[in-house]
Length: 157
Image (cartoon, one colour):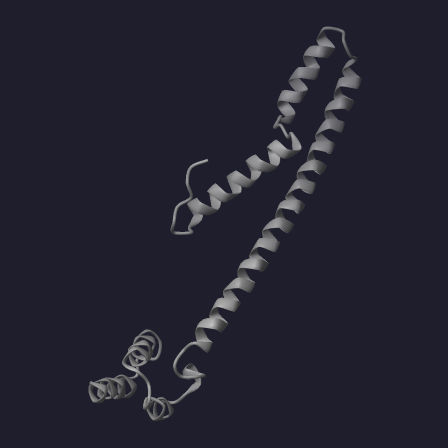
């Protein structure tokens, strides 16, 4: 299997799906036969007199029904596995977000007005002020807040 792309896009999803299917196929000793190929093999057996035509047709139908059921079982297991993986990823993402917001220099920053942010700038280090400035640029981009941070940075020097 080729190395997954780093962008997390459809190509990477396809690579992951392909890898999972290959792994499951090997573990379950799964092979892929089309209905047409199965019918062909049993038609040949019937033509040679090894099995009756009606038995061959009944066998094709039974094999195909069991194959469909096996496919459905495998897809259910795969969906459950992917669901557990997504839940784990969502949980880890929430933990990281909580951790990063707790470490942010100003608590509940995104809920504060510009005046409230300006009131909390005093006492922050240059590094913390730069972090707040970057966050403000990416999110609120409020001119009064950015100007206040610049003033605080100049006072600190």
